[in-house]
Amino acid sequence: MNDFKLSPLKKLEIILEGTHQEFATDLLDRAGVSGYTIVNSLSGKGRHGFHEGHLMFNEDAVLIMIIVAVPEELVEPILEGFAPFFNKHTGVVFISDIRVSRPVKFRSREG
Image 1 (tube, helix red, strand yellow):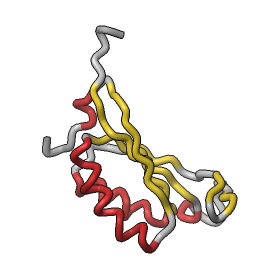
Image 2 (cartoon, rainbow, N blue to C red; image 1 turned 180 degrees about the horizontal axis):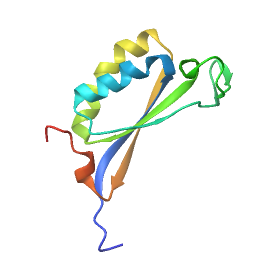
Image 3 (cartoon, rainbow, N blue to C red; image 1 turned 60 degrees about the horizontal axis):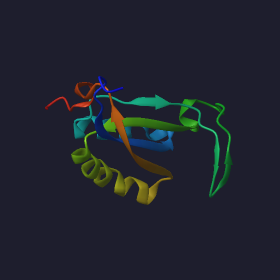
């Protein structure tokens, strides 16, 4: 592993209702995020009980998770953008420290 250089980044896991996917991805795009992964149809248990991940009526009726790896300086602007949203809507953001092997893949489009 000595030949394998790893660079630090922050991983955000943003869980919200599928109906708000466009809002979230637009916010990330405007923040300069280079890319993200979207996981649909989440299941799990939270404060409001168990949430079934299967499609009920359409893809908007389920919870999704958007996973993004960003430099630390983008975390605060992204959280500031989501703050008003999460004051009115259900969801959560998890933030963790990660290390990646190809940091150039995670630079903003401007950088």
